[in-house]
Image (cartoon, rainbow, N blue to C red):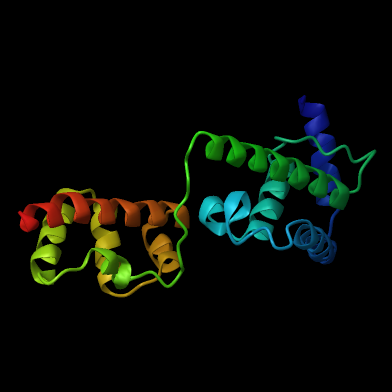
Length: 195
């Protein structure tokens, strides 16, 4: 897209008032709510995979693609609402395809609850909980700063979303850190003191 075309699009975007943006947001999110109805609890459109609730994610990404000129707004042909919906629809299709390929390769996701906190290790608890926690503390100290902050947040009973905000990472990053901690607990701690 050349400079002149970008300038034309920018002029059209500047014409949209704050009140109109609120209407655009309402209309686009209403469309997305219908399109994604009952499809956001798990899978390609889950908050775990996207890092945000699906409706917010697709709307914000579509608008961002227009403002960064990643996707050309054909304002002569489509209203801003139509263009955002077209972009979001394309992203939804691509995400489903990407997720399908991932599943075909055998990558199955673990489902998480937002209430996961210090009880994250319930499945690996045994009689010697103190030894287990000491071992995990040692592993965490050897890890990076994110892992250490993550562990401290878990001990304080914070939820995954809160931890994500603290370490300034997406929620799915927190879930992967949870998996890493559980893996270390099972392989490096339980096996060592079970022997």
